[in-house]
Amino acid sequence: MPAISSKLFRGGIAALAALPLLTLAACGYGSDSKNDETTKVAAGAKKIDGLDSVKIGYFGNLTHATALVGRERGLFQKELGATKADYATFNAGPSEIEALNSGSIDIGWIGPSPAINGYTKSNGKSLKIISGSASGGVKLVVNPKKISSLKDVKGKKIATPQLGNTQDVAFLNWAADQGWKVDAQSGKGDVTVVRSDNKVTPDAFKAGSVDGAWVPEPTASKLVAEGGKVLLDESTLWPDKKFVITNIIVRQAFLKEHPKAVEAVLKASVEANKWINANPDQAKAAANKQLGIDSGKELPANVLDPAWKSIQFTDDPLASTLNTEAAHAVKAGLLDTPNLKGIYDLTILNKVLKASGDSPVDAAGLGTS
Image (tube, rainbow, N blue to C red; front, side, top):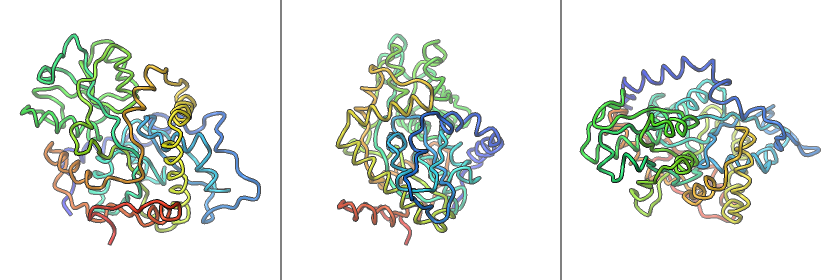
């Protein structure tokens, strides 16, 4: 299997070097939150697979609302019994992949590009995608005083969350489709790509340090609240306006050794998505509550409401779009043409879906044989 390009490999090494700081920077503030309902364990509950804990990672994004709602409603803990659900929050995918590889987390919600990178870099040995979670929820938001049309983006500074993350690849691909040249590693070219943490991008936008951003929700709606304008919704670039934005991944060793624990987490995820789709207003409030616990501040209605409307929650990994996103990374020069055969293992998910009366989902030829 072809390896990831040396350019992105160097970025991965940089992320690995920062790993000792992970609990303070990338994943700390959500891990020991007060009033965490998931610490409650039902009387008489037993440990699953003899595990003391299962370590679950996700981002503080509404595109990860399946995890947010599952945590806030105690669904993961309910399914895990006396095995504690431990949590870590991240800001971007590459950092979460490093945490997965190091064993700092076992299962995580993550975007497609970091999952592709992690799988390819490890020659198909590090992770499996075991479920979908969400589609959509990504927008190009700009300063309307500086940018009034798509062609005006040329020559401007546009923020993305991190080199090689899902939105970074999507923006680089879109820029290439406009005929613009950008060096993916440095971000310099006909458009300047500024890699900026989602937590600081709104301040950078307000200060004028960037002219726009290609970002997930709720960051996109935060920029709109600061006077930004949605110039492009990424869903309009995809057939049926559907594309994978969030998957669930697992360490392969953990999947092999603890399938019952993986099944418990997937049961909770499927239950969370069912509840989200049946109770959108309550689900929106639950996700916002967990965001507030994790970050110390809930989202105001003028950010939460438009952000929520742009996201679809689904257990289907939309596997056919993964190949397309991989092709985008190749075109951007961030990835050598990968062999993604086997990146999915949807066996347990389809077992859970069948038990709940739902139709199975497909790996689009990229599943475990």
